[in-house]
Length: 93
Image 1 (cartoon, rainbow, N blue to C red):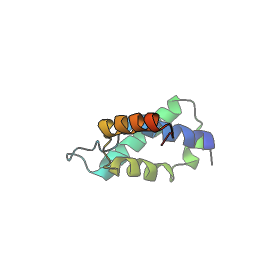
Image 2: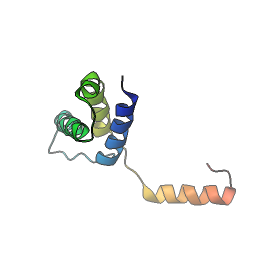
Image 3: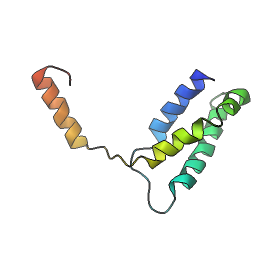
Image 4: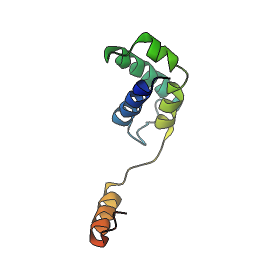
């Protein structure tokens, strides 16, 4: 297991798959497969060895599918309110 590669995968997913951004045109599975292929292509370009990527071939697609299937929407207004309340209460929560 390559922890360096898995950290890179987590970062790639965060940067390339925003939550709740799946249109009805493409199924979750089809989008996950397409993005997994893109991820592995970019991994090769990023300098990961074939051994590192092959070792994680079974672990990565479920991570991508989970990210694609996530329908959580990010509410910026609620986030701003929580930040303001945390600053007022000085508790950091």
